[in-house]
Image (cartoon, rainbow, N blue to C red):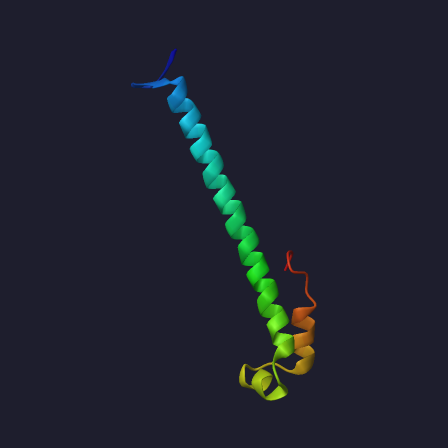
Length: 76
């Protein structure tokens, strides 16, 4: 079975490979987004472990660090 698309003829196997490739690409993109959000969450929690002097070095107060750490891990 062959399907014509423009000048190329794609077999059913070619179409399946293209669909699987696109599915894998979208899956990797989703995993990267989740990983980014989780890293942001870890970074925010790390702020709570810093001493007041360390927070002052990065330009934050304890209250600002607590506010930042309490933000939603996913939405902000």
